[in-house]
Image 1 (cartoon, rainbow, N blue to C red):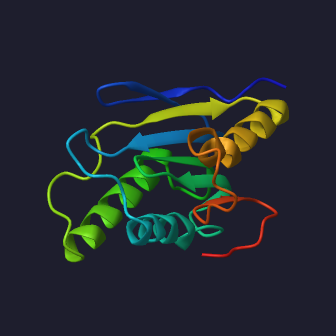
Image 2: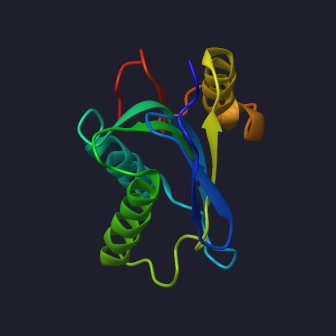
Length: 153
């Protein structure tokens, strides 16, 4: 069976799109911004989870102090660039209301089409292990989730 054709969405970087694809997405805070506080990480996590099973299906996510990873499959007529724009815009405005100022996120983001189940498993494992890679002493990190885990935040 032939694969669906690729569509290219371009900002500063090219972003490849395929119908019904799952994507591994990463975006970072701006270079001159302070790290996300625990309350700010909760705000970002809440925004990511808000439209799960409505506009997209989440496989995994983690909100770190300076970046976010999401493994997601857009559903319906939603495109990945719309989802990322929503997450970044909503969280920026929400955190501005809480006292943060300035450009929160870098303008661009990285994304990759997850090609098969093996790559999906490796990617989810990477996302789940991200906090322990950075902070080996941390036993429980509340801003990480994968399909099949309990929702705790």
